[in-house]
Amino acid sequence: MKLQNKAMLITYADSLGHNLKDLSYVMDHYFKKAIGGIHLLPIFPSNGDRGFSPTRYDVVDPKFGSWEDVEKLGQQYYLMFDFMINHLSKHSAYFQDFEAKHDQSKYSDLFLSWDKFWPAGRPTQKDIDLIYKRKAKAPYQDIEFKDGSHEKMWNTFGPDQMDLDVRTKTTQEFIKNNLQNLAKHGASLIRLDAFAYAIKKLDTNDFFVEPEIWSLLEEVNDYLKDTPATILPEIHEHYTMPFKVAKHGYFIYDFALPMVLLYSLYSGNSTQLANWLKKCPMKQFTTLDTHDGLGVVDAKDVLTDEQIDYTTKKLYQIGANVKKKYSSAEYHNLDIYQINTTYYSALGNDDKKYFLARLLQIFAPGIPQIYYVGLLAGENDIKLLEKTKEGRDINRHYYELDEIEKQVQRPVVKSLIKLLEFRNSVPAFDLNGSVEVETPSEHEIVITRINKDKTEVASAHVDLKNLTYQVKYNDQVFVF
Image 1 (spheres, rainbow, N blue to C red):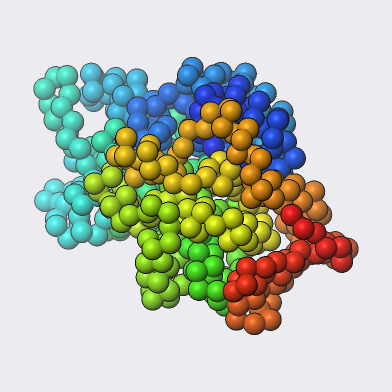
Image 2: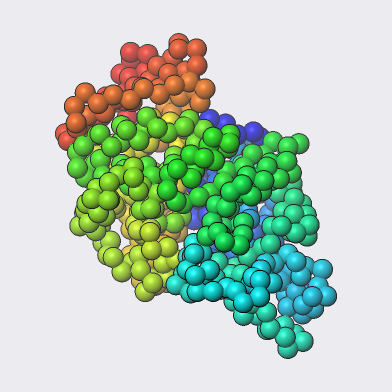
């Protein structure tokens, strides 16, 4: 199935029930009209990072189900799968073969050698300082091979996630074969996780390296040209980087919106939100929440440093049970520029504010994505967080089927489902259409979506101070 202009759910295979069959049941019973697509967070055998350290891509982890279960979902919903273009598990058969045979392994150049990357006498401290890093130390791991030899290998993320060498024929074949296989099993979209880290080049910071990054994206696009699948490069950084990706014709994420909306709802001021929405491309997916924390760096220069600081402080004051330590190394937080919370709790578990946040997201340019915890207006799961000591688990609650049945009866969830059904059925949200944004006062915002032919018009007038809204579709007023 090809990508559709309908709201997309982000979920793990075992978060709405226990597996893909349960997920299919939940979708059919509660969200059939509200959701048009599903981003299935990693469904492959993995050795950590909740699936983001895959050992292979050709099978579905049996604890979730099978390709048959995935394809059944794909008959009703357009699907997005993850492909970790930067790394592969140390516990994969590929890396284990490399460890056993070292240079004699057919996978020896699948992985990126730190030692071979640098010319003699390097890296210097200056080289290491220049690298855009996810951790305090240089991004390598010393590997001992079966023959007793040692070699340092690139290792940007967790200890199990070994970096791939995207320059080699072996890696290019690996990427091509796996992407085409994902497309064969129903991928409408393939999310390129951590793609900005994939290119490493001397005398650069090894992040979003141009022009090589464009060549990589073109290669990937070419692998998928005869399939229904398209790619979504994932990048958490200054908004100018995803905007460059958009100018090359790709879909992007709007990761700035979550903090901008929080600022707007905390302060009651509509100016920054309006300015941001006027800049955004239409070919994007909007988010308020994902499986990770709320990105702070994404909002830099969309909000001023003072506004980001204000929003962060307010979040810790208002956000239900959010403490700074939950986003620290003590709780295994990989990225210091993210805050761990559910979006509902970031707004103080306030139904009215939460609904307005979703209303504004849905009228923003692009296609809305809604994380499964957000779809059920879920509160912070402090119990799970303290059990695992994993900061991001605050927003990774496991819902049982009977619990979902209760949650969908809550007024805020019912309103949200109606709102999503409205978004999916109204032609005014045409991606080839236009968006108009006005601010009648500094605490009001009016967003108008108009289809390409200018025959369908939907508008949302939101008062951020009084927390009221009016939605009109072709002059008919809608209440959710």
